[in-house]
Length: 111
Length: 180
Image (tube, rainbow over all chains, first blue to last red; front, side, top):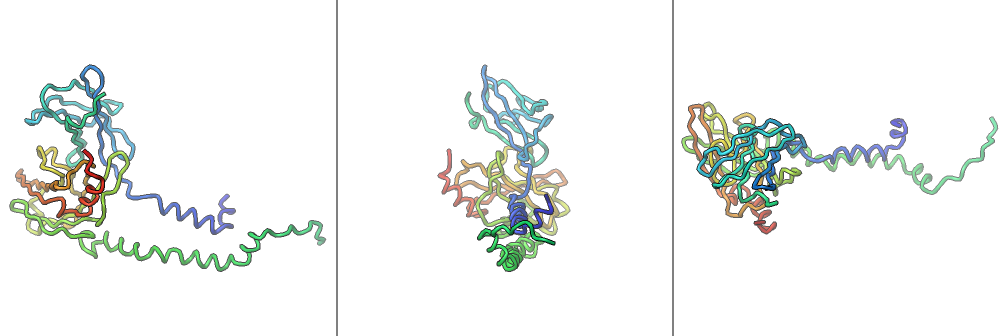
């Protein structure tokens, strides 16, 4: 296979050119998505942009007055489900200092 | 040795290849030359020879400290899959505050708390980098907030208009129509 490849320099050059176009830096930025599910519950899913999950990562539900309403950690499936608080809140996916995602209550999709 | 097998008539493509293959291969050697200006520009940018970034934002005073900010690329935010659009900034702490500052953070809009101060700068204090997510619904008059955390536990914040920090990002947001 490879000997055949090198007998066709144009093909080989084309393949190497394609490798060069393989895109930008492979970052792994944190990401989190919350959706309202049935019975006034909210389910949040965390992860990283390289496709990896985030089991065990802290996810807190915090009130606008900075009190922690629901402290929690993501489960083995990288999700956490909690009851929607009565007061105003935001969700903080916290994978360490500077690796956070904030989701305001206004940005949580209805079912 | 007898030539029992009659030679196949060569196709026109094959004849073209055999006639020109030497010249075509020389052309292939020239292809990398076209990429060289960008390669050397990038090498100089990442080595720091051409400054902190492609576009200097200037020095920002943050409480008793200051830092120099720059856009790594003078261009609109780049998409990073499901994490959304990202924009990279570089920063250098002032010489006297290097020993005093523990961490630097960047966020669009005023942070709610130190825990939610935004993305953290990493790297040497002379040249730190941070990749900031730009929500598509960001308003064009948004502000970029810089939070510095000291080893003594103090925290200082400052903000600059996003239009000053990255005109290309504001132009991109305006073109997007500022999604609600």
